[in-house]
Image: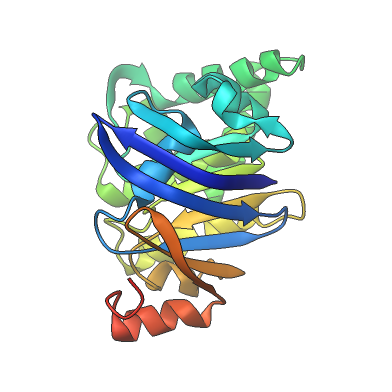
Length: 246
């Protein structure tokens, strides 16, 4: 589904990714772990198309398309979703309206019918239920006044409504307490565990992987993948740290 070959990327003239190669197949969950400054978030931003991140070499293919040739909204319409480490606040825009506009924009780009108000509310209620998020929170401005855990759960509701085929989740476990971590993990499984979907889960710690069990674990250091293994690699890193492999 996603194939990255020899990817080099920089921001403000500083090289961050240095020949990263990675392939994620349909139905797979891959975890990327690594020390601070390794390039994990940069990889997510490059895949999502964040301005300022310049690819200087290499290629990224998503479902047979040249991902790097697409604008961010085109990547989203093609099925790519980027979950942020720090979801942003948007004062003055209700979460429900934001989500309805987003999902209908994607429907329009694919030549599909827009959701009616009733259809959207039914879908939003279903996905909010998965993440145990009160529907009243969707009436509030996007993320304004939300706790860290509420922001992450709300973002997973957004993912459920948009229904992407590929999700890049950047430190979704950041700021979550034990209960929220379990709820978010179960939500990711319910939304993204399917034969025609895939997940790239970026994390510092093994704890989220207790709930979203990866098929493959990669260690990213100095802008490239330095080690790949099964789920046991995450436990090894938890015990020994990154110095042994980075």
